Image (cartoon, rainbow, N blue to C red; front, side, top):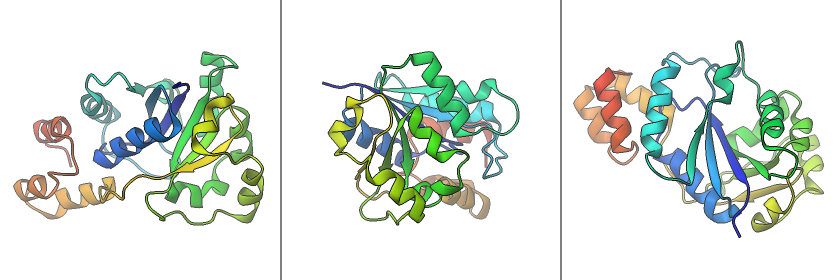
Length: 215
């Protein structure tokens, strides 16, 4: 039985096929009923120049009519820097105590998890699943490793509890990167960039980038 909602956060500048692959992998490995892309308008650990309205439009275009995917605009409702702890606390209030909520993060984020605000408290509201992408995962800080050791379960057992658990799941390696996409547009003629990014960008997203002359 599928249960629970995955929360895949990011600036999505732009959203690409690697993001979609993580969402599909989580749906399959964790047996989630849905994955929500949580758009961060002002991530505190990075600067973003692309208007949030365009990033939101690209996300919705990438998802299309897939009922297993959705966009969460919770962080667009706040001003100032956005912190994951505030978002998951608010979503827990929205969904109530029984709904399994799973924070989906990449191996690079996991390596720096100890720098997140109130990272221990996140487990009061959600479980955490790290996408390892074929052995790319590095060990977190020792205090994080010790904290999650007793909370670790196999992927399909993660959503048997509303929160407080930890697991990892694998997907095939994907070369797509928002940073690399922006760099290609900055350093190559646009026609060449679009051709090079043929397998990285959903067609609907590439169309919007061209339409808005983004990047």
